[in-house]
Amino acid sequence: MIDLSPEERDRLADVVRLQPTKNADLTDQWGLESGSEVHQYLEGHLSEYYYRDEDSYIRATPAAAELTGVDPGIVDNENGDPDVVRVSSLGARVLDVIAGPDERSESVVSVLQKLRSTSDCDPEAERLRRELQSLKRTGLVEIERRTVPTFRRAPANESITVEEQATEEEASETDVNDEDTGEKTVGYEGNAGDPGDILDTIDAEFEES
Image (cartoon, rainbow, N blue to C red; front, side, top):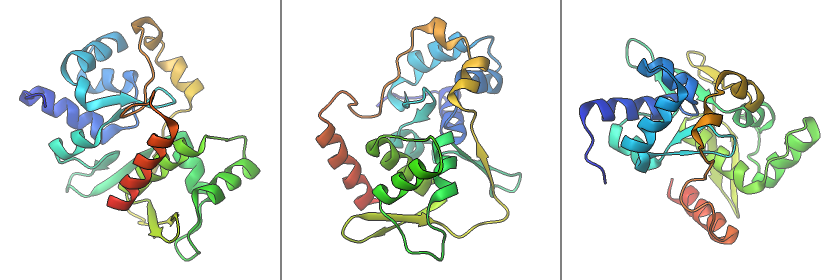
């Protein structure tokens, strides 16, 4: 594990707090000149603690959240209470269709069918599982373990604003520097491995959460 300086730890906390995020956001947050500088900093200083998801958003690893003590994707107000929860475009679509707090929780397959029937959103099941796990970590979704993990939206907290990140197309317009850095989109923990192994790992993470 990398021994981080105070600046590195602070910037890693930004990644955890702002995720899912992109170069343009961190350029502004860190006072840098370009997305290329952000990429170089991440690779040179925080490579063990971040990855890019399927939509090229920057996300922190679980180890980063544990190290910094910051809740992923959650922005606190002046009193230190959760104020804004940032979700991806897929996360926002999931929140639109998933069972409500007073409804029976539903499986990944059920959520996927709802997404397909109500929009042009058609993610792979493994990607949807990861998104549901991310929403669970932010407190927006609850998990109920039956034969398989099932999910429903957590009771609403009116003091918290859910903020959707820009779509991939919108992000590409504001973050054109990404194309010049030669970055590669990778999944966390062995995206190139056997798909069955990946699904087993994800199910295990749900059980341990």
